[in-house]
Length: 121
Image 1 (cartoon, rainbow, N blue to C red):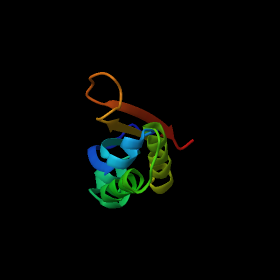
Image 2 (cartoon, rainbow, N blue to C red):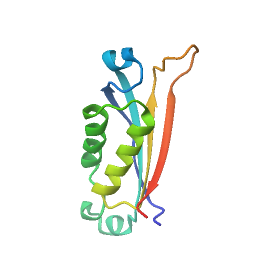
Image 3 (cartoon, one colour):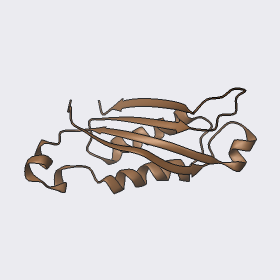
C-alpha cells in the first residue's frame, strides 16, 4: 500500500444534512478533509500531472455529494464520498473527515467530526 498522500483540507460547503427538521430547512456549513493515498513516485520523478490525482476533480466529487445529496447523518455522507473517490480516482486508500459545526445538542462544542477510512481491497 502506498505511503504517499495528497490532502485536500478544510473544503467548505453549505448543505442540508441532519435528522432534525430545522437542519433540513435552514442548512449550515460543512467542512470536509480528504486524504488520498497512492504511489506518487512517477508523478514526482517526471514532474507530471499524468501520474497523480486531479485536485479539481476530487473537489468536484466531494462537492457533488455534500451539496447535491442529503444525508441524515454525516457518517453516511463520509461513506458516500469515500466510495466515490475510490471508484473515480487511482488511489489505494482514502480517509474522509466531515465536520458539522452546529450540532443540535444541549451543550457547547466546536464541532462534531466523523472520520472514515476505506481501502480499495
